[in-house]
Length: 270
Ligand code: MF3
Ligand code: CO
Ligand code: CO
Image (tube, rainbow, N blue to C red; front, side):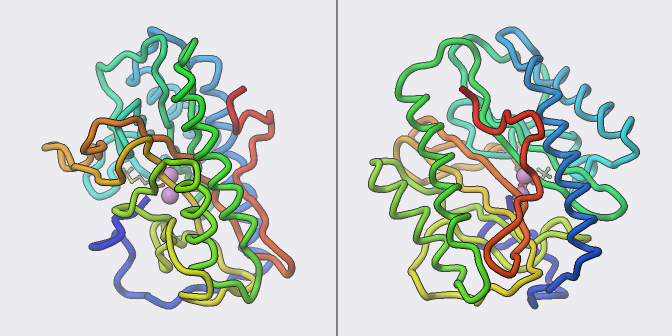
């Protein structure tokens, strides 16, 4: 996800690109590989696994499929995955850290296939997790679903944000404001910013052929985040748990196509 304020969005183009059928086909292939990468990781996400191992598995999988890991060397980031456990909101760097029983973690991957970006993330539960952690995961999934349900030509970006925010807050959780979804395609982080909060009827009008991610970050406590000294890792200020899930989608004539659906049906953990 991109920083909502000083965003990673390519400053050269604020205009929202509208793509044709060949681009849809490119995104379908990229989105599928990203989803398959997370499917591949699923059996490995067990208590005791190191985040460095998951990163290596993902990198090898992507390279073996003739694709590129988009995050590796992206703006100085050094990994294939972002792995964000518990109170880490996003951009957690893989390393020595070992995931343990009771943790929840978001794993985010972006692949480049023939120049097209597939960007997706899911929540993973490590063994038995607390009921409040389960509830938070469920709220983040349902928030994404409700946001995506708004996507169709003629709708506005604010409709997406409002659908997510009103649902999440009714569940007594909060929506992170500091990061947002983004346009993507041949560019990783492109216009528009997709805010996960907002007012119905506000913002740019959606058109068939627009591509973007929806990737709400939902906290059990307050929405404020803090950036750690590494300049990447974002955590909740109040140390409350955070969850996120992300799809890459394209606007179609009557709704949206989700490019990053899990072929194995593993997008939502049971
Ligand atoms: N995949 C993230 C997103 O959803 C971006 C991660 S950027 C990185 O946009 F550099 F941290 F990898
Ligand atoms: Co993204
Ligand atoms: Co992502």
